[in-house]
Length: 236
Ligand SMILES: [Zn+2]
Image (tube, rainbow, N blue to C red; front, side, top):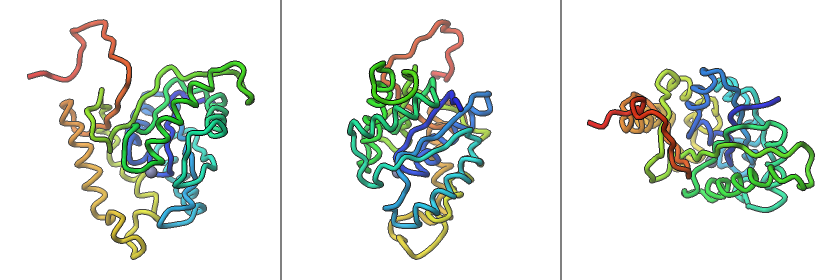
């Protein structure tokens, strides 16, 4: 199975929090989308890896992705090693995405910012002909960083206005994480705050570009424009 756009994240539910609306928007445009979670969630404060697997599958259906899988990197100890790069590269060669979405390279959780570098280097390795893994070499054309939780100005945002409710539902599919419960009460956002948090963050990024709800991304490359008359986002 091939995917046009593949989102890679450290933990199940990371994609739902940072770029789920974009995956919905791209699916609506006819592209096939996928999610690669690097860990299985065995170290989480709430829920078991098995519960999170079922929840991730439910969320994947809500996000309309054609493919989702999880590797077996240790939850809470994602490291940028050659064996881990090869595991990701093998998936890249199988799914052959043109666009890869990674977490932003700075953040609070080491698994998140490590995944940014690990994912980038796996994209590079996947294109090497003499790599000792199956599949024809493949290097994604475009690498984007989902920056919703980063204190950084996005390169661009994606309008997710028609998909904001479905994006929220994909997050709420993680019942073990977000349903109200005593375990981890001081760590987790109460369920009734998740809607407000999801909508207000998306509204903030939407306001930057003159749309209602949006998700932010950083790209390392400069933008390229052919026609100034078609530039979006009003200046004054
Ligand atoms: Zn995470």
